[in-house]
Each structure stands twice: as structure tokens, then as C-alpha cells.
Image (cartoon, rainbow, N blue to C red):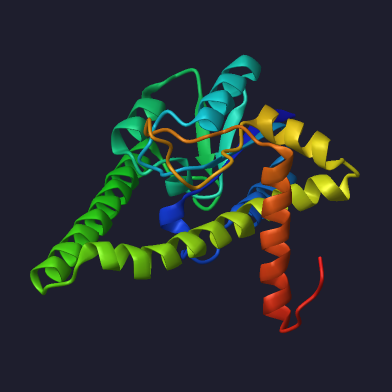
Amino acid sequence: MKKAVAYYRVSTEDQGESGLGLEAQRYAVLLFLEHNNYELVGEFVDIMSGKIARRPSLLQAIKLCKAHKATLLIARQNRLARNAAFICDLCDDKQIEFISVDAPDADEFVIKIKAVCDEQERRNISIQTKAALQVAKTNGVILGIYGREVLSKKNKENADAFARNCYPLIRQLLDKGLTIRKIVSELNRRRVVSTYRRTNTGGKRIKWHLATVHGVIKRARRIENKTDGVEHTL
């Protein structure tokens, strides 16, 4: 039986993108495993931008693939990266093979072309965002007020999206009977990033604590309660 390592990623830029949360990615990969005779030897999660090549869990996933001569499985190519140089380097690395389960027969040429397109899409989004801010400034919008009145709402939306994406993994661990303390250890072992906010050094915190897990559970359940139209006491 062939061996495989699964890698899943979401980022704050992608939270509004439909259909590829962590749970959906995992379902797609597990379905591929089931129908293609693979043994899963590890799963890794990053909640970071795809433009960042040196993501903690991705590096660990690649290392495990090389150690077990396993295939790296992803739900879709841009979940692996939106960085064309990184994708091309990975294609040229003869020690590892990766498969995007939505296009498992794609050859190296198609993969590299797709990588360039994904990177260009990311750049276009960045350009459009900067242009919109410049137009707002030219039209007399005071960006400080924009930050207080708009970005604070955006931060809440990002925090909600982060909780929605992390909660399925935490819920799976809860269903397995793990205590919150053991879940903290497991998330830290997998190096799942613990916040959507950048640190002052430009990286992201990856240390989970009891309060972090409790916070994600509370926020995610509150979102679920509002979706149901009923306010519950946690």
C-alpha cells in the first residue's frame, strides 16, 4: 500500500472563499485515499497565507514525506501555495511527489502554469486592495476612522472565520475523548497556528494554550447558535 501525508491550509485572505474550509479539504483528501489504496501516515494544518513558503506544518509534512517516501496530498493546488517559485522547486525536488486530489492526473507543465496563475491572482487581489485604499484616501476618507469603524469589524469577522475553520479539527479531537489539555498538546504537536493575527516579527504564533482552545470552542458554538436562530447558554 502506498503511503501519503495530508496537508490542509486556510488563510485570513481565503475565509470568504466557499467550499474549501479545513473540514471540506480533509473530506476530499480522505475520499481520494479511500479510492486509491493509500495509507495515511500523517496530517498537517496551517492557517497562514499561501504566499509564505516556510510554513511550519508544511515543512513538517514535507519532511515526513521524505522520511516515509510518501506522497503529499492536498485538496487543491492553491492550498499548497500561491507562490510559483515554491511550487516549481517542489516539482523539481525528486525526493517528493505531491498530488492535488481535484486534478490527480495533472502533469508538471500544467502544475507550473497553474502555480503562476495562482500567484498572479494573489497579486491582483493585493493591488486592488491598495488601489481601493488610495481612492478612499483621495476622496477624503480618514483612514484612522476607517480602521476604527471598519477594520475592527473586519477583525471580528476574521476571528469568527478562524474559529469556524479550527473548530472542526478540535471537535474531532473532542469526539475521540481527548480532554482540553490533551487537545492543546495535540494542536501544538501538529503546529497548528493558533491565531490569524501576525506577530510583531512578521511570523505567527503557533503556541496553543487552554484559553486559546476554550476561546475557539466558545466563539464557534456561539456562531452555530446564532445560525440556528436560538441563543443558548454555553
